[in-house]
Amino acid sequence: DQQVKQNSPSLSVQEGRISILNCDYTNSMFDYFLWYKKYPAEGPTFLISISSIKDKNEDGRFTVFLNKSAKHLSLHIVPSQPGDSAVYFCAASWGVGAGNMLTFGGGTRLMVKP
Amino acid sequence: DVKVTQSSRYLVKRTGEKVFLECVQDMDHENMFWYRQDPGLGLRLIYFSYDVKMKEKGDIPEGYSVSREKKERFSLILESASTNQTSMYLCASSLLGEGSNNEQFFGPGTRLTVL
Image 1 (cartoon, chains in turn green, blue):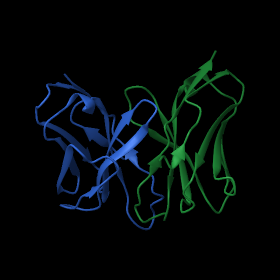
Image 2: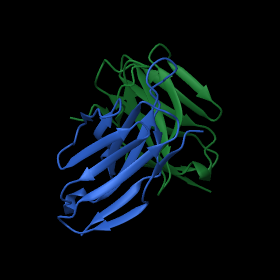
Image 3: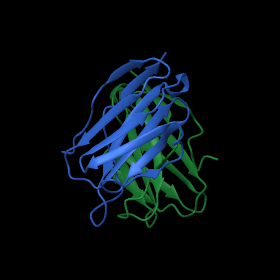
Image 4: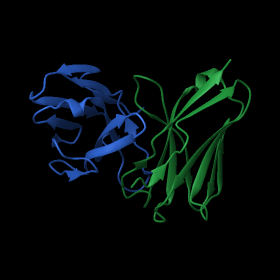
């Protein structure tokens, strides 16, 4: 059973509007969450992360929100740009610094239309 | 900048062949990982290693083995390739211990096709 789920396989957004990508998890041991972005024929690259002691982390156009009670996190991209078109993976781990594994969701393909 | 390199971007092999995928990282990371990426399934962990000569099974180790003879190098071996192993293979590395946020750094991937 998947412990990290991204229920929307794809999302299409107009340039300049907000993109919201969602992620749900089931394992309450997870205490650190990361978002990765992947272009075709390239490896995933780290985008933004959040610790379970926070409910929001912001980096430029990217903001991640964490709702621990709902075991839900979301990535907001404002404003969306055509270069943001990629597959986005949510990942979860526990024990920051312990070198523990990341558990990935299935990914959401974001398409930003000019 | 962390650099993770993989020996091939594209590979085509025949069923039954032994396949070696090589990965090298230049940041002295303790941890190294092999994943496969398939549409809708995300990244699934095949094997990982915390140290030289050490290996641990991930979620889908069947049909694969690994080797870590040097800290910077982690090899994935398909003992007898099968068509269901056609996939994108991704190698990653990460720091262990203080200063690590569990972030993993990925190579560009190897697209393997087994005919």
